[in-house]
Length: 255
Image (cartoon, rainbow, N blue to C red; front, side, top):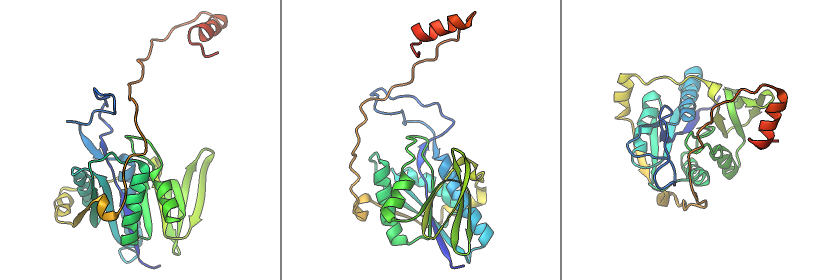
């Protein structure tokens, strides 16, 4: 089996344990003074790249590269990926709000320079839940894609992925290079040890800008307003099916 380079995308998001609030301008959620961390699906992607190297050895998985697009603090997320086991990192620095297509274009430019054999991304970010970047990236590269992966392996130079689909599981095989997006049941990400956190500070981290990559990241979508969902009303006990139907028809107006 020839040697592989794996590129993993990671995103800095509001921590999954934080109760999000809509900001006063109703343009999005409040992010100031809020704990951020790596997107959970991206943690799974980093973990899977490391497990592939542990399984097949460094002679096969030669290098793992972590990439993040975002503000300066995204470097903290990249350092986490390096502490987990990635070899080096690339930060596309921008304070602009990036849409999935812009991220896909930025990643495609980096992939053109780095020439990885496999790209692993989280299936979606928990802040916008778009579930678009991996598919768009594969389209831009004209590479095969395997989304919602619950098992990933490399056999005889080909990629084999078990996918989670509505009807159960689907096993697909594709040639490399390819794009994979991870689902929750793929693995349980490891915690970075203190020695590895210290080592991560010395690992190479390159910073570039969208202009350096020649990518236009202007927004094509406009958020008109963001509001919190209505508070849930208390339940009611009904005495009969007729009363239930009456309330569904006349109060809830769902019939």
